[in-house]
Image (tube, rainbow, N blue to C red):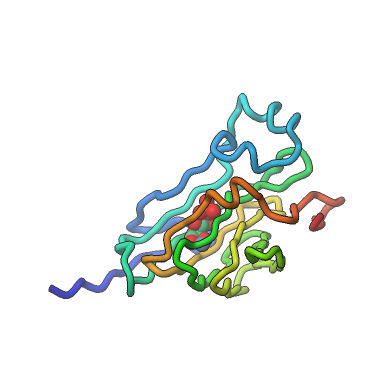
Length: 181
Ligand code: S6P
Ligand code: ZN
């Protein structure tokens, strides 16, 4: 019994997918510890804004499958730190394909030994995240930041090590732009 081919409409500007499943919706309260300005976290906690959402096609999370997902990070900051994803390692070290499709953002990548790279993802810029690099995406603009991710169905997501250790760098507001500090 072969699986049937699947087709999905991706609205590259908005991140909408059809058909889709909403697989991730993270508010500040789901990742409050990730932001360094504790007073700013407390100030925003009452509103508890949605930081980002992700939509995924109906592809099984199994070996040999390619799962694809659109992420939409809202524009905003907690203190001087831009809205960002939690970030993760894959449980099974494996590469991931990222493609920026709208807005202004970047992906922070870090190895377990602490090497860091930051790549911008304007619309049309693809970034390859090699096996062994944790990744966190950040919206540094004033519009929603949208990107496509394609990853192995058996990759799995390990959030615990990032929750514990964080990333070695933060993406912070700097005038009209950003700096990596
Ligand atoms: C999945 C890929 C992305 C993220 C999404 C949300 O491997 O890296 O689709 O899942 O951007 O980020 P996070 O860190 O909450 O999974
Ligand atoms: Zn990933």
